[in-house]
Length: 112
Length: 115
Image 1 (cartoon, one colour):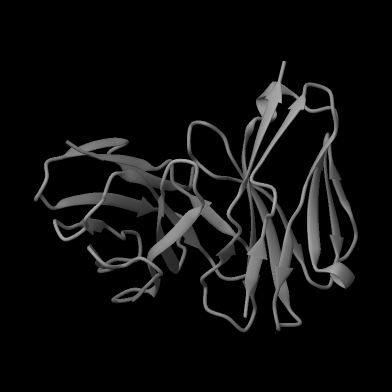
Image 2 (spheres, rainbow over the protein chains, first blue to last red; image 1 turned 30 degrees about the vertical axis):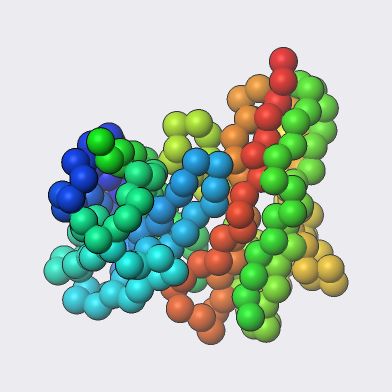
């Protein structure tokens, strides 16, 4: 079945470390997205990519980096510059404006 | 500018009550798409419905129904005879044909259905 796979489901990071969250899709979607969700809050866009080798900053890109070397993959790195990285991270993909997003199951990142 | 407003932050109902979740949007496009997603406690967002700007027919799917009114820029979601399993956060979203692939989400409405 087609879908989006995010891994790991839970991730613990020490202060000052970089960590990378994985997002893979087999839907053949052009666009991919990363969102951050804090407890009781809505979705905030970190980065998005409409095509391979191209990506744009979202509303809260500071302290994060991404790459889009393959259509299927859009990994997110949470760098040590991100002051408060503890949150729930959701990856999504889309085949255009008409069809909606397909979301992954999320990664819960905790700084210890 | 595009915007989606879900004014209801949290709603609590008793099981079997009907409940309506409001969604008001702003857009300058004539062609756009509206969506509802459900986020249960597990966290993954689940697609519920899509509606394009040219189709103002109301939609019913089991206990769920959606009322799209362009005159008031609203796309409201009603759950009839609510159940505990309906407890979740519900998001409304907008995309525009002339825009980027970036969708605009509302802030979500947390629905609690009490047994």
